[in-house]
Image 1: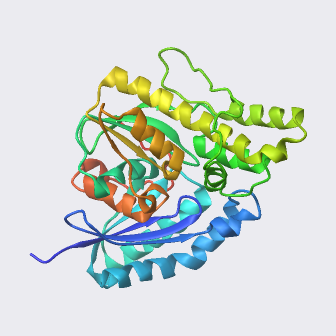
Image 2: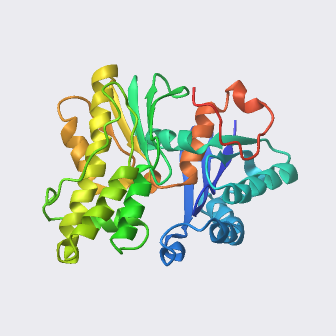
Length: 333
């Protein structure tokens, strides 16, 4: 039997992504066009500009992924595409491209949940042991899941307001650093005092595994308003702000670990690129359990994770039904 190839497409925010995955679940190519520099001058992602760039780049990115995989479009047997959650006009570009390819080539197209894709990214490079506890932390999502197999992801905690990535971006904007905030704050925070100032961590209740970051952003603004000479301590303030975000994430992760006693820990999403989170997580669970964090290329938005999730679910009956365009409420069971 000849090898089969699947195409995956991801356009939920400001990265235009295409990947080729084979029928064994291996990533053959993974191409990402990032719009970070384009949106930097605006201090965040502008949906209209993001969708315009997706429209211009989607064909080029898909073609490049095919070339790197050394295959032609007619060899693709299935298409997996992100259909939510995300920015609707950005999702529309990827879904339209996927459905067009599907109609022209008479091949099936399947909707994939973006958050589930992030979780699946942990499986690309690692053999996960179950049960597993997963923290998904990105610009738009901060959630925790328990996994008892590679298909069913059980939501156990969520943010009630801002995501951790939003806290980084908004904090960076308040500090006058630009976008994307997480990378800039991480860079400033290296080799400086991490406890220059103690920013508050939201307490959601003894038994709660939810997160909250909106108050942290406000506390940063109040601190700067009260300390007019704050710029001379910019690096230490950035490091202290980062520490509060990281500690908030790990505090709940440790709480969930004690409650569910998983065999492994997974951390994924764009904020999982943060060097402080990666090092403190390894230290927090040292001699307790194995921590799996994808390499940087699979933490940020990419199509390989969408392809991997499609591979995990390809025999699932839920994928056989009618395609729901732009559904942002696909149940995370």
